[in-house]
Picture 1 (spheres, rainbow, N blue to C red):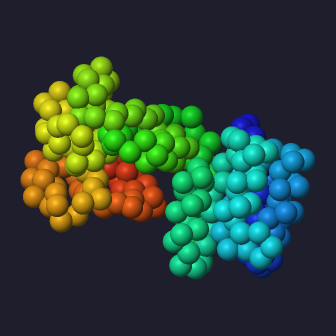
Picture 2: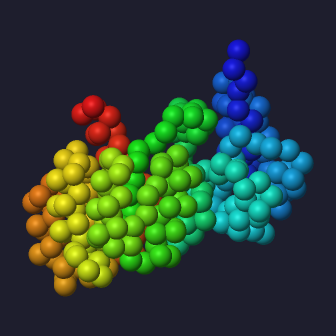
Length: 250
């Protein structure tokens, strides 16, 4: 029989910790709880957990800082952040730092169980090509998406992206509309000729300046356009939706 995952729940809400422990314990998981960040860090030093569910807004030390400390101790730790508040800046920081994702309270426990099982699957995610001349953004996207199990390619120019697309079939392309040489639209159209099934998400920080290019890309079957600064939570939801659509089409 396959061994069930070990779970650490980090939240100052003792009632939530107790209810999550009961439900997950009945499902066969080994569950431990911590009331704050420092206690969680001490526990992670002592043992390895398959997954950590952590409140993003806690006294003493918030979930983002706790996550950073845990990753220093266990770089491969899988951490799912939880929140009942509008704390978009903390959410953005957590995702950029490689948190597995965000779930919102009140928790859907069946969804929690599904997340635990999904995180343990070894199946490959979609192949994603990120095309942008901002190295920092590329690195951030690569870190976040790789943590979710996606295989990532990086290109900083349209020509480089086209060359990479000729060597590997990427199912999803995240592409900046305004690239240094050929535009993101022309790059997308060229990649589409190589791989007609590729789904593109255009990105831009120049909403008005490149509005026509964005509209033309969508007319040519680009999936949508994301505006910078990228909402990482929205991007993850979007990519998961595209991946499911590709799987159904296949």
